[in-house]
Amino acid sequence: MTPGASDICHRTERRIGYFTALAAVFVALLSAVLGPNPAAAAGPEVKDLRIGIRENETRFVIDLNQKVEPRIFGLPDPYRIVIDLPEVDFTLPAERLGAQGGLVERLRYGLFRPGTSRLVLDLRSAAKVAKTFVLPPDGAKPWRLVIDIVPTDRAGFIAAMRPTPPVVGRTATPSPPLRTDPVRRAVPVVAIDPGHGGVDPGAIGKSGVYEKDIVLAFAKEIKRQLEAGGRVKAVLTRNRDIFLPLRDRVQAARRANADLFLSLHVNSHKIASIHGFSAYTLSDKASDAEADALAAKENKADVIGGLNLSTYSDDVQNILIDFAQAKTNELSVRFARDIMVREVSQIARMVKRPWRSAGFAVLKAPDVPSVLIEMGYVTNRQEERQLRDSKYRRALSGAIARSIVQYLETNDSAAVR
Image (cartoon, rainbow, N blue to C red; front, side, top):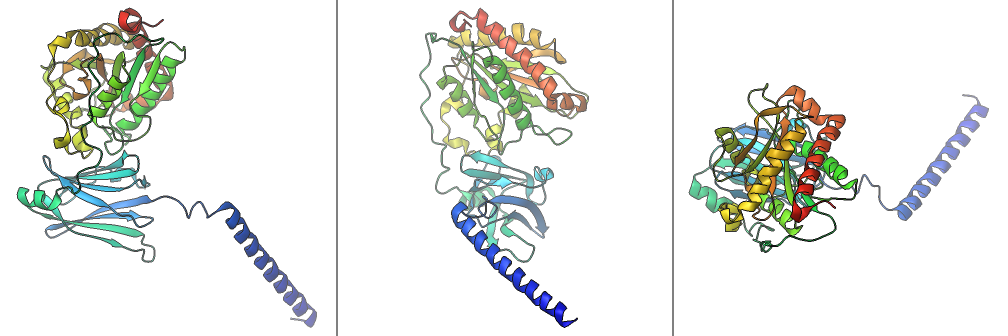
């Protein structure tokens, strides 16, 4: 290198060093004004989940972007291990939902309530947590919450896994008083209940789509169409992906003094060719074996969500149909059988005998006409594609909204004005 070139090189290096130092000062000042890097301040995330088996032990590992404090307890009948975390984002492959291995029969996860995310491990048999520990990041490995599970008997499960302190938020709340007189107001109210949510995904489609997401999209569209004319108010039991117990769904409709309660679902079947729309009302005796089986499946939503049902009041656990409230059920049947099925059949394929009845827990509000609908089968590829299509969603939601308005127009106590 020539002397002249050497001087130029040194001057260039000094300038680079000067501008680098200046840039560092600028970044520091900007950080002081704007606060920390948003990425650095990101909330906790679950990055991955793994189940490992060694001899008689099952190891469950949760990968996280930061350290968290878990709360772990068990619930019997059926046996479950519940892992509560601070509210986290689950940024992991969709196929992790339903993962299994060793003592774990099935895994579910999602938002349980504001501030709390929940993972539920369904167990093949009684088992207890033998060891829990947290591993700090190591090279490319993130924070890891490790839970070792070993077999036990019922007594051992209850002794080791009993929740302490009791599960927060499941104390019984007073039910709204039974409504005996019509509520007079400017516009009628319809409660729309998107089924499942959060830790409970509901049915899983051929493409991996979750029932909880499909029905929430439909609920928002039905609400939009109902309220477009300003003649009906629609209340959603949930407006995001969060778990909601069956009791709370019923109580939400009663607290709103709703004139109608509509619970939205999509179905699944082991036979992929099965398809069609159906509507269900409440009965103490199921109209057929299939309706009875569907009610039993839908009524397990609280078990799936990891609730301790022993804290429930009798009006949820052992509610019986009070035929003194026969008028409520009569209105439910009229809406489902005589109005909705006719209107929706112009848009959607229907199952054979599209109106049925069974003991659905979510339909047991004694003073609110209530109907549960299954909008189609996500295990049928054609119907799953339809249910995910925005154009079809608008069309089917429109038919449902029209049937609601027709019902309200002919119901004197909740007439559309």
